[in-house]
Image (cartoon, rainbow, N blue to C red; front, side):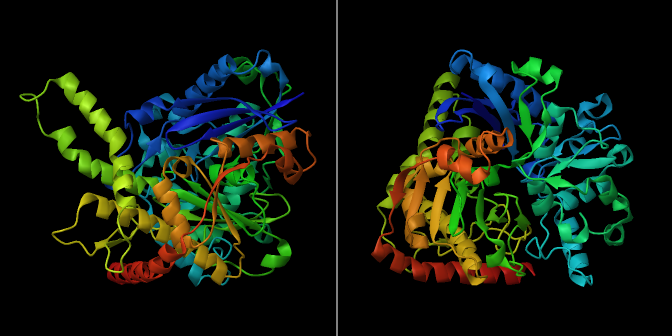
Length: 553
């Protein structure tokens, strides 16, 4: 008997999942929220600045695993054979010559530029545009395997932005490391640049790694963008490893902190959405959509099916980033649940900001506010689901946090068209839900246009379990069945599958999936009449997007 441990670091919390490798049973799970992030520290949404302190990750890791043992079967810790991390990405941090994250040093402890630059941080729009322009002007387009457009959400743009903004970080930074790789190196004692090896997933999709150019684009390419990048690519490991590969064993220090044995292996890390696709039993022709604050769309294809083609406008095609022996393909939306949360925040502004002390006491106000915030989206969904679908309905774009795919552009803004004096909150909410479904359809259409077969959609993440209205709208807009998975922690489950494979329990990820991957718990079928009506609204969505794109140009 052996257990695998999957650790899923999301935007606001870490989830630990213990899985029986012999039958896939999820034995225990635990969630811990990052304390500094919960206070909004080091972030400035008005500037799209979102930073996370490494101590949030380290402290939460210790707490989540030790809390897991209180929920797991007696003696479970002694049966753990391996663990694997998945995290958000691109979420890099600067490290010094010893491989120490700068924010862990006293002089940088409160400097946001020395912290992890979270995936949703869009400060580096200018830098991303410069990288894209340089690649397009180059004899070899080093972005051809990353969709042709570099994003402000990605590694090089973020590193360059911080290096330009902060002389103290610039002088202390030796290299930059992705969150998923940093966690793995931390627990195996391989953070020093001489020992550090990067995971294939992050390197291929966000750091411009490709085997054909011996790792990363040449140094002169980066120097041509800005001399501040001189030498950085040579300080990154040219070798990368897939997430089913052993990075090392737990150090004695970390084994003691986590209540585990030094015999526990740690596999290389991956991004959350890629691990989630593995937990969802991804295969060629199956699109796995991780639906949360944003979305990430993952599928895989054989070498034969992709051939020499470069898929335009997505977030990369990488050999082995999802399933070893296949090309991993990534796309996604910069906002999905975040768009609904934005609307809730707008509607709740009077509740939170208008003084009511003379009407109700503070305790009653707090309880009322919590009740309304808990109920508002659910009630809007119920009301919106009863509204008819008309070609003259309100139409919105889902670009409230920029556009990830197709064709990354974090400078574009959201728009709403068709409002009038009769428009009310459920109608607007309906348009926002439809906007997220339309944005997802644009991604599916792009894959199909580029010759990547999409025959089935599988969804994971909180939204897929929480809202029948959202899921039925998606089924109608996409005009295809949508499977929802049983597991509440599909990303952590995928990480556990990687860990079980690396530990030698299974000979391959696909073999581990046969036993450990999540089962389908519910399927949404498209309603034919709705699907037909949404064709017209989708055309209006595309036209509105073209108008906004033209205005931003």
